[in-house]
Image 1 (cartoon, rainbow, N blue to C red):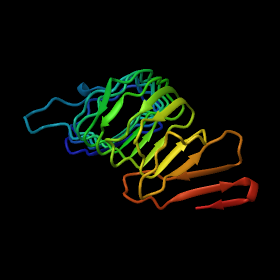
Image 2: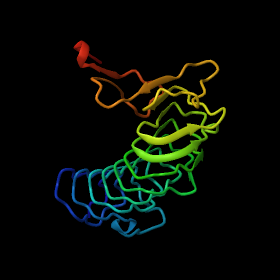
Image 3: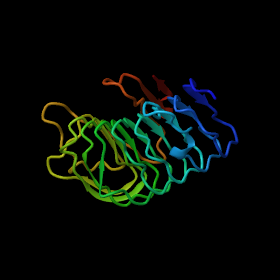
Image 4: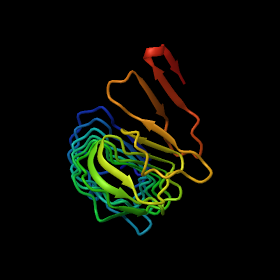
Length: 239
């Protein structure tokens, strides 16, 4: 009966099923529960044509979900550390999608989404990358820690600032493909990374066992100014 409820916070509870939710909810935080399913029938029935689902921000990370329904209103969706085997539908309004640490083996022939800005596919079982030409607003792509062998064409992704291909089998960029700002990779072989004509690319190399590291906060901002540098060998710690 909470028809005006907009935010639901139930993280860190051993909840396996959710009750019927009001359509007024815009934010759900249900991380680290024991949820096994969530579908569009989980909302109360509409009483009029204007009574639509308003969910925009959903965090279902660290659960046991094997699938996720198509909800057109969602803008931010975190499904990391679940049991997904397929990529959820990327709806028109979706801006951020995190499906890292799942069991996804295969992606659709092409991945499309007019509003998607950030896509995290890391730590899955993906062997081949489809075309991403129909992600015109994409700024950040993480496909690291997948057994991927693919040629990647990013010529149509004019806003792509950052891509992480570390710990993949073999990912190369087709001729004239460019990444605007940052490429993270496991190898220093840069023959297939074509630089921009005017701007340099930051190449971040990752190697296991080294005592130095670099991290940048990624989010929905045009400029990234926050960074963390750790150098144990030099006793250097900086933010």
